[in-house]
Each structure stands twice: as C-alpha cells, then as structure tokens.
Image (cartoon, rainbow, N blue to C red):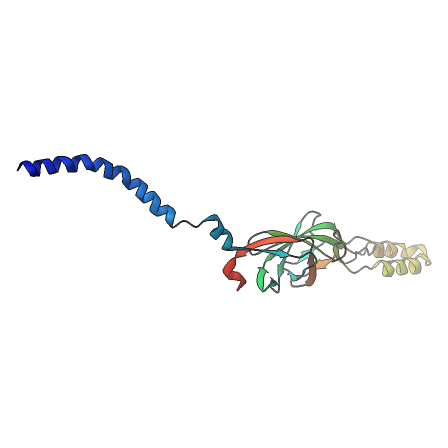
Length: 209
C-alpha cells in the first residue's frame, strides 16, 4: 500500500515535466518536415525571356475609330505558346495589352478615320508582365490602321462642279460633306510583336520537363 502511494506521488511530480517537454517535441516534429531554403529554391526555376523574342497575337475585340478614344486599351491574345529551354514561359491565350495613342473619326471632305496604338505587355505563366514592342528594332514603334479616304473623289467633284454655273453650287457643298470611312481594327486580325527587354520568369521545376 505504501509503495503504491509513493509511486503515485512520483508520477504526479513527473507529469509537469512531461507536459513541458511536449510542445518542444511537437515543434521539433513540425520543423523536421519543413522545406529548407535550399530545397524551396530548387523547386522553382528561373528562366530569362530574351529581348526580341517574337509572339504571334490576334485582336480579341473589334475597335473602331468611330467610338474609340486615346488612352483606351486594346486587348490581344497569344496564339502560339512561347518556349524557352523547352519550358513554356508564355501560354497560348495569354492576355496582351496595348493602348491607343491615336483615335480619329472619319471626317467631312472624305477624310479617313485613323487608329494608332503601342504595345504594352503580356502576362507570363507566373503572372509577370513582360514588356512588348511592335517592332524588333524600335522600342516606341506603334501599329496603325486607316480607314478609306474619299478625299480624291471629293476634290474631283469640287473641280467639276466648280466650273459649272451657280445653280449647281448646292451639289458642290453636298459632296464636300461626304465623309471618309472610319478605321477598323477587326477581331481576329493577327500581328507579330516582340519582347522589349530581357525578363525573368519563375516556374515550378517540374514544368521544365
């Protein structure tokens, strides 16, 4: 009886020590399964997309000079995945952004509408924004489209009618008010653009296989 009572007292004295050691054991167990910085780095591969890399893109939505404004975004999508060292760094369908720097409606006297834009960037597989340019040899080059001009036609009519008598003068004015055609950037129109500068993207190591 005495020995049992003594054993119970010893057990009660040891319990606080055991509970105090438990968090340490738990922390040690948790730390043992955490990846080291070196292992984390090994799981990610850094790849450089060289300046001048070409991308095939197409317009996502039609843009017209009739209702477009300078500063509006122009959206494109990547048609063919871009690979560097056998790894896809820019996927098919990746969003490409441009911005209008010129938007002029068609005007009277046969003046054609005009659209001009500069490329901005494309979203890579790790969501890095890779800067783009319209040409491989000029960073600030822009693309542009122009509507059909009727200026020559209007000028011809003005000369012909101007040689006639006063009664036909109203016809001269009517032809002067003939408008040109607005510039249209149609959905699906394709372009080739280029990476503007060397850009690093980070992808999981398994994607390089």
